[in-house]
Amino acid sequence: MVTLAEVAQRAGVSPSTVSYVLSGKRSISEPTRRRVERAISDLGYHPNAGARALAGKRSHIIALVVPLRTDVYVPIMMEIAIAVTMTARSYGYDVLLVTNDEGPDGVRRVAASGLADGVILMDVELDDERIPVLRELGSHAALIGLPADTTGLSCVDHDFATAGALCADHLADLGHRDVAFVGYAPQVYLRHAGYAERTLTGFRERARERGLRILHRPCEGTFESTAGVLGRILDDRPATTGFVVQNEGALGPLLSLLRTSGRIVPEDASVVALCPEQLAEQSSPRLTAVTGPAQDLGRRAVELVLGRIDGGSTPEVTLLTPVLTPRESSGPAPLAAAPSPRPPAPPSPADVENSHAQPLP
Image 1 (cartoon, helix red, strand yellow):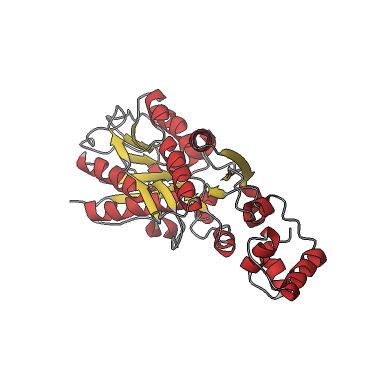
Image 2 (cartoon, helix red, strand yellow):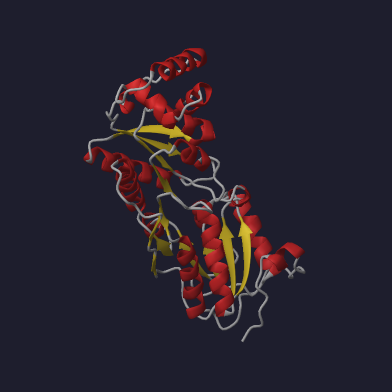
């Protein structure tokens, strides 16, 4: 799809000059106007909704780019999307859904066409390929998530680094010293999803400060993959008594597998989850969990993008404070670690890299 910027380049003028030719808001010299019109004709540019926007009118539509992945927790994504829709409607805006499988091209198509006054990106990665497009086009945008470089952007997210630190502090306060972090599937870390990497960083840093020995194990979230992950954890670190889980799919299997291995929760093993409050309350036992309301992310994202549309000043980064709620799944560390059904295996190089091998007190 041809953009206004490409028309400007072809005509040898600025994008604003093309805008003035289309809108008629300013007087443009006849030779310049003819060059712009020729470029529009040669390139087949069709402003459509963009022309209305250039004439000073708004579409009163916000584009929401939603994730379409198998490794995301769909209920949370839907909760955010519903909050965006309801908040937008309260301000007189409708929401256009765009799936992230279109990548940068989808963002460019919506932003350059003028179909939407602003864009909200979900599932933001640290080096997100969609962000350069927003910067190039000067689009009004808000991000749910933090990229590595937030300069000039408006971003809102949960404070995942603090969430990870809360988990480490909670288990350290209960006397646990060997703790395993069961994370999302490997592909989540490979694509540098900000929420996963920031949680792990916060957890690791606080674990180091508190003298915890930790293992990080990615997990696909199925029963079979969770069984494999738990088996390797107990092989490599049989004294593990604390589990931090940032993977909604793995929570049920892990609790079941701990029971069948003879480890009673929380007497023999404590589990702390990063998950929605509803999921924590519905588990058996009820889960000690770090939570943050997804609705607040959607609401705040709409307020940020509308602030940019109206030309107001918006903060680059807004972090929502997480809360840890103790429930039935965590308790004091046992006096002795639960026995392992298999002899421990020597740690691999990857284990050493993912661990903080500090002496126990």
